Length: 338
Image 1 (cartoon, one colour):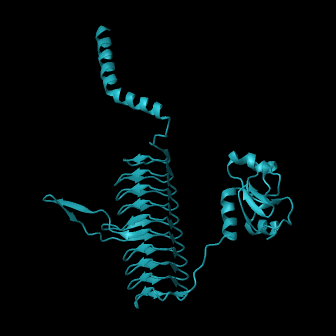
Image 2 (tube, helix red, strand yellow):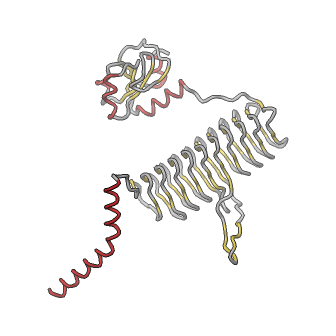
Image 3 (spheres, one colour):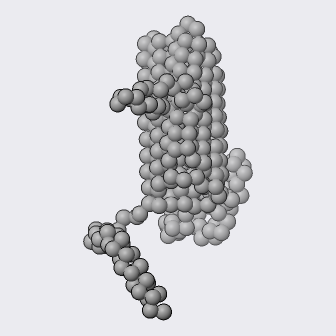
């Protein structure tokens, strides 16, 4: 594709040789004369000045520093993503049911659906247009899956759960397993039946080995365009607002409500039965035990530091209680003398 055709397709302002033929994408350091790259982080300006790319997607503030043709963008990373989707579209499925798959006679599958090897589709399921149910997936009874969704492989969708349109479920994800509902009775745990579902909106993406528990009574809900990274745990009755994103190894305890446009960084733990407002950013390895009612950035993780320095800090932390008592005594004596 010629560079001017690429610029026209994605609504980007072109500066430089319009006849460059573009066949793919690469980083600033690795790109050749027929590949597009991008600059979104100013830290990579030194690589921009040495790049041999055919063109660079770039913001107007840095375009003058590019030695190659530019595609000027208000959001270079987003436009890079769109161009990347053009050159590397998601693989489509071949309509039909693999001979080794097991599909209930009562399931309703559009003729464009692809069901892979050793997949299982239960009774009463409704599977929309162009859906891909990959190899080894298990779709239990009563599940609804919207058009153009894709279960990549070995995903589990529990009974009666609902997936919207264009949802992507990566390998090993478990949607709709029982929540952690237990009651103590006479020294033994009694299982509390989990009667709710999981409802996932349109354009969501669920990472590999992520788990979303079904609701205890009401449903566990992900609104539209929620993105969960790999190995995220969402407990029963959690509600996540539209356009929120949770990074790897985040855990959210039961009945918590997370607002819209929230971002929760990796390895953070969110307590149960709390509310998090729209537009909250939580930094990595943070622990949230109380509701947050205002947008903004919050964090409690302690970054790594040299071991000897950290050991000294730990010693001083252990001395804080004694130092506090001594300070109170000194303040008390001072007050009496006054």
